[in-house]
Amino acid sequence: MEAMWSRYLPQTSVIRKLLADGALGDVRQVFADLSQRGPSDPAHRQRSPELGGGALLDLGVYAVQFSSMILSTPTAITAVGELTDTGVDAFSTIMLSHRAHAQSTLISSIVARSSSMAYVTGTDGRIDLVGDFHNPTTLRIGNNADASTPVEWTDPTGIKGYEGLSWQANAAARYIGEGRSESPLHPLDEVVQIMTTLDVARAQLHTAARSCCNG
Image 1 (cartoon, rainbow, N blue to C red):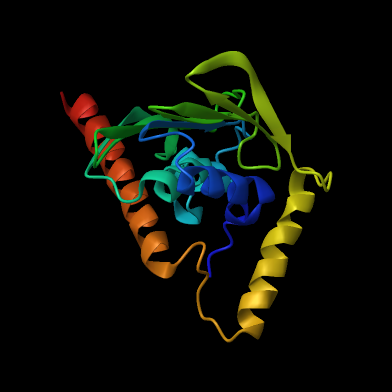
Image 2: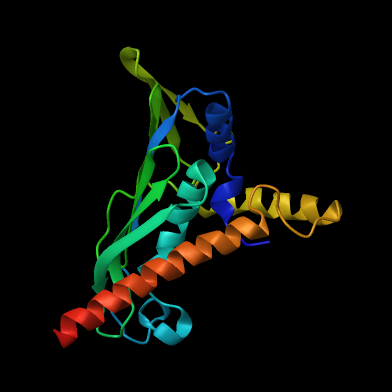
């Protein structure tokens, strides 16, 4: 089981339920941005190729898994961005195409901080995750047929920040107790597909960097 704690937050269950109930209609777009300003020390793990550094592996994985949960496996992957002097991706934008005329735009950075928000739009409605979407946060749920103030949902437990890791720990304990070897909310096949998407994106960034330097 991969420790993707965002999958186990109560807000994620609410999003799943809204999608299953068709509250958004046909989903057309997913947007997620997780950008932070990390240490500039070239020996830091975020900057080290040997330690799996780079924005995509450290932060972009949260955006990719969010897209995967909603729109599943992409049919096409395009990535643009730049590398640091140490050779890891400093920032990037991944554009994914999906079946049924849907797309994802996923941003990550280790050199500049953003609001780190996400949203899902459909033919009938929209969900906004207000700031640091991978943490416990507030959802704003709007209906395209009603221009009034969106409905807001906030985790009633009041758990904030990394205290939200407790939801993942509880789920792991429950699954292990049930004799499961993988999580039904984040199964192995999906984990592998998410990593494949990240690897394809990283390869495109490095190929573009080599072409630029050699040109």
